[in-house]
Structure formats: structure tokens, C-alpha cells
Length: 290
Image (cartoon, rainbow, N blue to C red):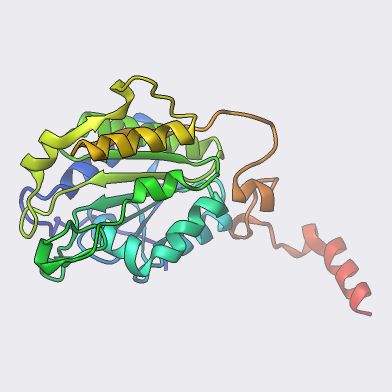
């Protein structure tokens, strides 16, 4: 169930990259003046999945790999809520892969933050779907979520950030939340968040990250351009970060799932069910059942 509780001390290891994401999310919500009772944080399974326990906010601990399905359910129940789903790459790109890919197509106005560290940190450092060749005996090439996101022809917001740069991370989260609050659809942010215990990549990633907005030809409204820039950056041994897709505001036609299903923005959780106001509707249903 969704509940509001007092935050508990973090259980993360000192120096964990997840602290950067936690701080950035708090700052982004404060900057947008989002009150706690108007936000719901859905956590996945793994170290990052407990993030809602560290904030005084409405929280939901989802099933393994199912946080997106549950986050979409919360958004449709009450479209006025700011819904943020946060999980790890093991949770989201392994057992949760089906929900991950369908989230782009559904295009509900929720923010999905994946704290990516290339490992299953909570269960002692096994290779995640994003693990590089050779890590813990891994013989498979790593999955790249940004390339997968850019391959979907949907009006989603897509970005990658680095916990070692909290100012930029906060700025991107603010933009993503504003995208959601305008009911424009799904926002996906992959945050490079090193596991200092089992896969400490802080130094390596700090040297490799490259903001794609500094590259010639950068155009976040053009998926083909961004796909090419990301591939070229990766071919040079660098890690592309920054806003990868920022869809143009094209038409007045509703693109988000909640506006297609609930054009009045009133979900079942806030729909009046009193007898007096709904009596004509009830009578019509009874007459039809006749």
C-alpha cells in the first residue's frame, strides 16, 4: 500500500553514488515547490529501491522488476500526482526489461530514474545486464539503455547523468519533472551511480563522461542524430551523458497515457462516489441492465 512515513537513516555504503541521486531529487522537488503529499516515490528492488524510505514522502516498495507497472497505476489512479519510479539497472534491465520497453510506448507522465552501476550491489556484486566484458566472468556485451530508448519512436524525454556531477543531475531532473507536470509523457533518466563496494567506477567514469550537448550537430529533438552521436562517442571510448531526447511540442493532441484515458485528469482515486451526485448514472446503469 502507499504510505507516508518518517524517513529512516540511509542503509547505503558511505560514498555510494546513490546519495547524489537522492540529494538531486530532493533539490529538484524543492526547486519546483512540489509538496510531499503531491508526490509518490515508487522504489524497486536492490540498494536503490529503498530510496523512498529515506525521504518524508508517499512511498511504495514495488515488486522485483515491476516498479514501472505500479508507478503507471498510481499515475492513472490520480493523474495530478507527481510520480517518480527509482530502481537499479539489475532490476530494470533484467527481470524488468519488458516493462521498461513498454513504458516508452505507454508514455504515462512519470519519471523513471535508473541508478546504473553495472552490478547487483545488494546481492554481493554479480554481473548486471550492463556489466562490461570480463566483470565477474561476464562474457556478454553490456546492454545500453540510452540506445534502446532512442530506438523507440515516441515523444519521451530521455537523458543520462552522472552522480559525480550533482548540479547537472539536479538540472536534468527538474526538466524531466517539468515535462511530466505538463502531462507530456514518460521521462527516463539513467544516472551513472557507482557502487563503491563492488564496482567503484567513480574515477574511470569521471574521466570518460562526455556531455553530448557540446558536440557539433547536437540536436536533442532528432533521434537519428542523437543515436549517431552516442555511437560515435562510445566508439571513442567515452560515455555519452546529457539530454538525449527532448521532443518538440508539436500539437494539441494529447500524447500522454493519462490524458488519452482520462482527458478530465480525474482518476478513480479522486472520482466522487457519493450517491446524490451519481444517482442519474446509477439509475441509467440499472435501467440498461433491466
